[in-house]
Length: 131
Image 1 (cartoon, rainbow, N blue to C red):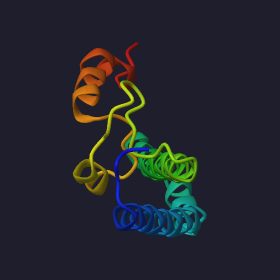
Image 2 (cartoon, rainbow, N blue to C red):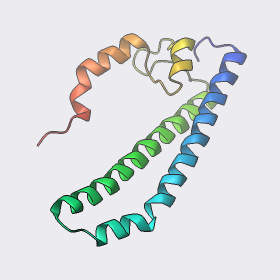
Image 3 (tube, helix red, strand yellow):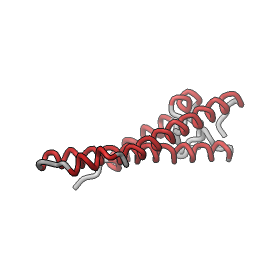
């Protein structure tokens, strides 16, 4: 495990758990709103193709938000497992230390800054689907 003090580990664990609870509440709220009658009413009262597109877009945006939040929750779960397995704070690429400042800003970080920068340069196309 990276050279982190008990106090630093406790602070990071608390930040991860707090963010997880926030995301859990956000997802719950989004799912409750997704069943809201207003989307059904909007889609049912569609007067033209533009209105239909807006109704579809609203549903798609809500779905994308929930997907992003669930993905972040998975990253937090992985980080908490790494914390319990005593390899939290170690870079997944070079096995060096990620650093407390980076972990405090981004507790689910899996790579140190040099490795993350290299990863983004070599894998930037993965998140940009093309036809």
